[in-house]
Length: 282
Image (tube, rainbow, N blue to C red; front, top):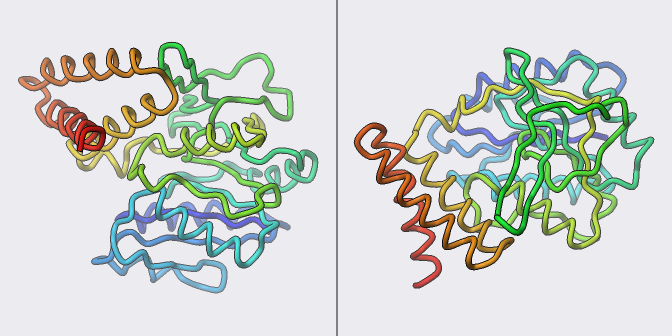
């Protein structure tokens, strides 16, 4: 059984299209779990049926905590399942569900698997993640290399936009770190479980289409607040103090430069820096 897990934040129409793309698949048992992070909008419940379960968060938990709510429910139902965490503004490409089922049957040793993510115009948005510890660079690869005929390629991290988990490898239910509200929780998730011995890979033959920032882009200031805070939290955990100070300083100067021309981005970045510094010193 494959359980799709998606998080709703005023994205009912996107989720309806996502569900439609799943229904085009044949011969694979699946169920969709949607975590409702929009307590004042009950339109998502219109989609509920025997194959779609809505779990109310009661408030906006952020991405990671909402995923944890769904993961805990799925783990109690079937601790051997495959969980496909997928953004609501994403759709499966034809054959993706069937390929995912066959992939894990052929490669049961993998714990965390990412897919290729395309934009609606056909450009590669994500094709694997790299981390360079010495300078704190978190790299999102956007090109397909010459090895796409391989079943999988090991990678440092994969995007939470389209991430599959093989639950049978986890003695307890895998969890995102609740310190992350939005952004970089997927990187942290992958690095923590990689250190615990789990294999992480990208599967080039499985692909989805994603509309970047169609949801988070609605509030630019909030987007950059969360992304800046989460980035600093991540660099602080996975790089060294010198790198953190350099990255933080550069972020502050960049935010100040942006203030006259793009004030929402500038204020958002400064707010994120302030939240991080408050966490460190208070």
